[in-house]
Image (cartoon, rainbow, N blue to C red):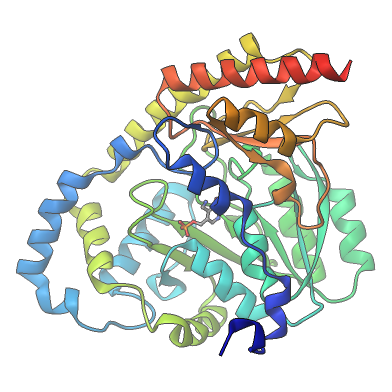
Amino acid sequence: MKPSRLRFASRMQDLRTSDIREILKVTQRPEIISFAGGLPASELLPAAEMAELARDVLLDDGVRALQYAPTEGLDTLRELIADRLRRLWGLQRSMDEVLVVSGSQQALDLTGKVFLDEGDVVLCESPTYLGAIGAFRAYRPTFVEVPTDDHGMVPAELEARLGSLDRVKLIYVVPDFQNPSGRRWSVERRRTLAELAGGYNVPVIEDAPYAELCFEGEPMPPVAALGDTCTVVYLGTCSKILSPGMRLGWVVADSDLLRRYVLVKQGTDLHTSSLVQLLAARFMLDHDLEGHIARIRDVYRGRRDAMLAALEEHFPDDISFTRPSGGLFLWVELPEGMDARELLDRALEEHVAFVPGESFFPNGGHDNSLRLNFSAMPKERIWEGVRRLGRVLSSVTVAAV
Ligand code: PMP
C-alpha cells in the first residue's frame, strides 16, 4: 500500500524533521566550515583506548557484555555514576536512584511518556533545546516559553505562569551552558526554581549534558542538589565527555519515580547496550576520565576564545552575541528584521553553516537569531568561517540600508 493511503497516529501531524538534521546533511561535505552541529571534536574521541578496553571487556566479561541485562542498567556502572555525581556535584543519590539510558535524548522521550497527556503544559526556557521540543512534541503538549535572561528563567515570569496555567506538568531546563544559548543559570535562580517548582508541585527536568564543560569560574550546584521540597529528574550523558556514538546516559530521580521510567523503558528497548555499559564502566575505572575531560575543556576553551575574537573582529557592531563560560555553543542576535534563514542561504554559498535560531523556540519567531557551535572546528577554520560570515553580514546590512 502507498504511504499516502495509510492512516498514521494523529501525533505524526505535529512531528517535523529538525532543521539541524537537514543542515547536517549539507555539512558532511569537507569544504563546509560547519558551526551547525553539536559535535564533540572528533580528534578528542578516545578510539585507541576504547579499542583496547573493548578487547579486555569481551575477553574478561564476554557473556555479560553480549547477554541481555536488567532495564535499570548494570550495577557496576550505576554505582560509578552515583559516586561521580556525589563527588562532582554533592548530589547524594544511591545506585537505586540511577537508571542507565541510551543517551539523554532517550531520557527526554521517556519523560514525555511518563508525564505528558495531550494538552498538558510544558514550561521551558526561551530559547530551549530543539531535541527536547521534538521528543516532547510526540506527546502533544502545549509549550509555554518562560522569558529567560542571562541568569536563567526570570522568576516573576515563571511564577506568573505557574500561578495562572492549568495542567502544568513539567518545567524543562538546561541550566549549564545551555544548548542553544551557552548561558548558565546563577545559583540564586536555581534555588528560586527549586522553591517555586516545589511550591507548585511541578517536577523539574534538569538536563545537564554540558555541566562538566566549564571553562572558568566556580562549579555550580545542580537544581537537583538544592531544596528538598522539589522533585527533580536529573539527566546526564557520556556524549560530551566521552563519546556521543556510544549512546549512554543516565536519569537520576527518587526510586518511586524512577520505577515509572524503568517501566516505559522496558517497552522502548528493554535495556541499554550491555557492551557499551561495560566499556564506559571500564573507562571510568581504568582511565583518568577527569583528566580526559580536562583536556576537552582546554581545547574547547581555546576554540571559544578563537570564535569570540573572530566575532569581535569580523562582525558588524549592531550584532550581539553571548560569551559562554562553558559548553559548545554561543548565540547571536542580528538586528530586528533580519532573517537568519536568508543569511544561511548566503552563508552556504560561502561554504559556512550554522543553525537559524527559530528552531529553538517551540512557538516560532525570533527569525533574527542563530546558534554557532565552536567545538567541532579547529581554530583556523573558526577564524576563516567567522570572517566569511562577517563578509556576508556586512553585505546584507549594507543592502538593507
Ligand atoms: N539535551 C541537550 C540539552 C543536548 O544538547 C543534547 C545533545 N545535543 C541532548 C540532550 C542529547 O544528548 P545525548 O547524546 O545524550 O542523547
